[in-house]
Length: 175
Image (cartoon, rainbow, N blue to C red):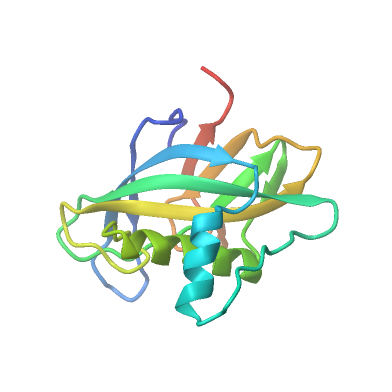
């Protein structure tokens, strides 16, 4: 573990690649986790962008609820940085680790596109050095559970063939 920052406390990810590309350097802050469904404005924007005449509200798996993780990332490196929460972040309930499913990642992308349309481009689309933008993750956890922490990997995935990659554990409990 590289550290245990609190919600609102920034930490720096150094993500290296096996292809020799320069490392991605991001200063990340976990801002919040809300478990009250997906944002209706984001859903309306996503529906409108596909030409849908009505906004449908996606339903989580039976017995589960959607939790939305909001983070802020600043590129502190010297190259354009691209990064998102897919395969690199988990929302945890005690010792159980939830990652985004393919559908969850699609909803997270809707958040990124919505904020991009508002002029807040995040690293999902690539951000230049000294630029800051939002990052979102969408996770499904059991309805009766409350998230306790977030794991943010400083690798290209949480787990690779070499095992769990180093990262930061952000405790969600009130300070």
